Each structure stands twice: as C-alpha cells, then as structure tokens.
Image (tube, rainbow, N blue to C red):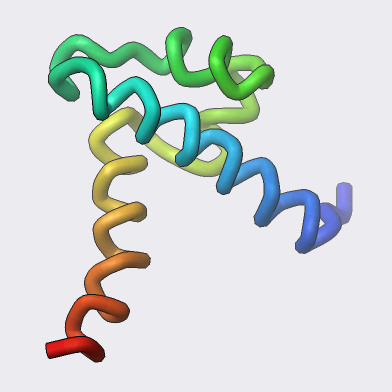
Length: 73
C-alpha cells in the first residue's frame, strides 16, 4: 500500500500532539499507548507504524526540536 506523505505527516503530528498534551499532565512512565491513540483518534496499530513506544515519541519530538534550538544559540 502506498501512503500519501501529507497524510502520513499529519498522522504522525496528531499522535505526537496527543502525546505532548498527556506528557504535560503526567510522567512518561504513566503514559500508555492506548491513552495517546484514544486522544488522537487512532488505533494502536497506527501508533506502532510510526513509533515503537512512548519513549520513542518523546525522542522523535526532541530530535525535531533540538536543531531549531541550536540555531538560536
């Protein structure tokens, strides 16, 4: 199946945004994939197409933000 890049990017963003909203309220150890997918409106299998676990979401968010931070130093 060929995925459309703009849909893939939006799905990844929606999952990351849902994670971030939950992460702002509770420790990462307490966050579940089910919480993230429920908040984002996807099923668990969709989550696992993009991330391996909740720690992977945080790592990918950090990786996307750090280059921008480095530019402003």
